[in-house]
Amino acid sequence: MTVFNLEGKVDFPSAQLAGRDGLLAFGGELSPKMLLRAYGRGIFPWYGQGEPILWWSPDPRFVLFPAEFHAGASLKKVLQRGIFSFTFDRAFGEVVSGCALPRPDQEGTWITTAMRDAYVALHRLGYAHSLETWKDGKLAGGIYGISLGRCFFAESMFRLADNASKVALTVLAETLRKMDFAFIDCQIASPHLAGWGARPISRRRYLELLRAGLSPHTRRGDWGDILPAL
View 1 (tube, helix red, strand yellow):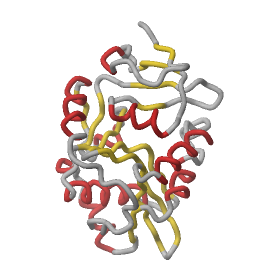
View 2 (cartoon, one colour):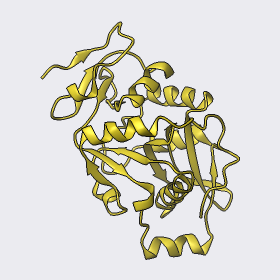
View 3 (cartoon, helix red, strand yellow):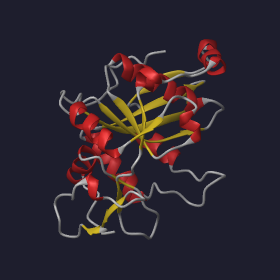
C-alpha cells in the first residue's frame, strides 16, 4: 500500500488509490484551497495531536441521504415540546469548540487548534456552516460541516443538554432535504448514525454521487437567513 506524501504538492492523488483502511496521504496543509480540493475529490483530513496531517477516503463510505433520515417517535416528541430553537451560522466558532471538548469515551480530540482554525477560515469564506441548538437562550448543542454544491460534509456535533445534538442533526437533515441536497457525508460507519438511517455505500458509488452533487451552484455565504425546518 502506498501512502502519498503531499509535502510541496498542490493536489491529491485519486481517492481510488487509498489503502484498505482508507488512508491515502499525509502531509500538506490545512489551507482553505487544500481542504476544498480534498472534499471535492472525496477526501478528508483526520489525525491526532502531534501527528502529521492524514488524508482519508474510506471504502465503504458512510452516507446519510436526507430523505432516508428517521428520527423516531421519542425524538419527534422532544421537538414537539418546543424546548429547543435553532439557527444557522450564529455561533460557528462556539460549535466547533464544543465539538472539540473531551468526551467520556475518547482520549483527547482530533479537532486540534489547527483544525479549528482551518474550518473557521472556511466559514469566513462561506463554505463551512453550523446549525446551533439553543435552550433558554443558551447554546445547548450543534453540528458543523462543509457545503459544496448539493453535498454536505458533516464533521462533528456536540451537546451540553440532553438530546441537543440529536435534534440538531434531525433539523439539519430535514432542512437539507427541503434544499434538495444529495447527501450528508458521515465519513465512517457509526451505529449511532445507522440508527437514524445512515448507511455504507462503496467508494466508487460515493464518488459518482459526489461528482453529480457538485454540479449545482454552491450556496456560499452566511446561512443565517435559512429558516431551519422543524
